[in-house]
Every structure is written in C-alpha cells, then in structure tokens.
Image (cartoon, rainbow, N blue to C red; front, top):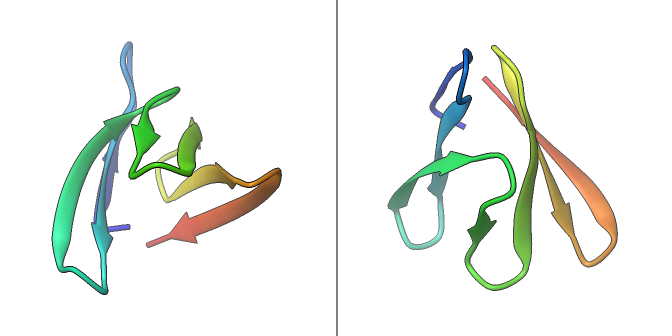
Length: 58
C-alpha cells in the first residue's frame, strides 16, 4: 500500500511488487482476478483473496 484517501469515496493506491504496477482502487473493486477491496482506512487496506482476508498497511 502506497497511500489512502478516505472520505465520501475512499480510495487507496496499492502496488503489485512483482510486476511493479500501481493501482488506484475503491471498495468493492476487483484487483487482478482474485483480489477484492473490502475496506479502506487511513493507514490500511483490507482485501479478500480466495475467502481469506489480507491486510496491507503503510
């Protein structure tokens, strides 16, 4: 996770460290094929992946 903006529409910037691609995401958005953004907070993003929750933080 590179950063987050909370407010009416929360957004976060995350980076795939393997491909070095950066994504601007919102809650509910699918990232790649198997990750879904579940929650965005000031210092963390929660993703779901194959039924598991993965947390990214600053």
